[in-house]
Image: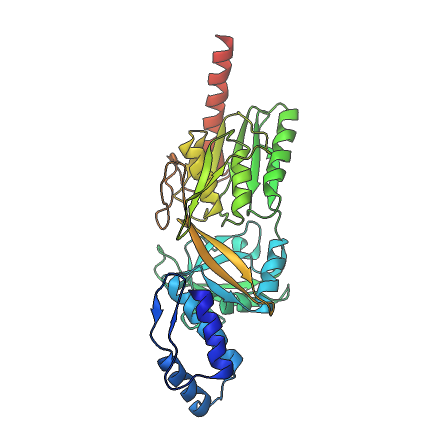
Length: 386
């Protein structure tokens, strides 16, 4: 329906319509009675608006309006914005290092990227950005806000946020930096416990996790921590591959579109899974693909979730390139956990809830994970001895 409407709107803007309007049907058989109202508004804008907007601007506005009407995750990207999205997925861009969405009309931080300026000044998941450089974000699109916060490294941007537990708005002066995202980092946390942090589900993340696990095995690791805190998501197929590193077989996630049978994503046979005890760290910035992995681990009883409740994004988007270099990012499906749960706007409660304390000498969530895994290692040793 949306594609048909875009085509018809393009026809209207370029060729015009007769006074009788247009009669049409979409693929489902639903009728469009008329585009008379649209044509009338177009006429008044072109002939009476003080700024004489171009047809291109009006068409882009019409497309934006359609997409923003249906859900906060569907939107139009100009050629420059689409190119920037591709650059960002390469892991390199200038800015402050935060992930944002529009939630109920508010520009909301999904998560700061670890080690970036936004993270260092103390921005948090669920913070609502109300102003950028003194301009209210309520009057911006998500992309306009992103454009204002991006910029040359070394330059400064000022933002104001509302935080649920803060008595008044918080103001931050942030120096932009060259943001390079190390999507997967790993180290031995103890002599027996490996630690893997996944910042985002970009290309090849599943194989990079596999490589880290192979390294742990060579060092005699007996358990692993998978850190998905403040990970806003990414590619669905990479979420399946990451989960497959720990789940040998069975359903990882199912995606349901408007029509047709659900698409079932099984554990990948291309990934060799490990059977060592597992803790997955999550928080309010763990969203989308992170929640797919966390839910699969939970539903398969494959490990323990530690931290705080996740963000709650249970929809799948597809980026559709257009001929002029622009693109449409559109919600195409809802995803369900292996136990058929739809976690959208609900999130996932961890098995063990423990808050993060930035002032603590050691990360309390990691310390709890180590405690749990040491107990699992001891239990496994006793079984083998017995």
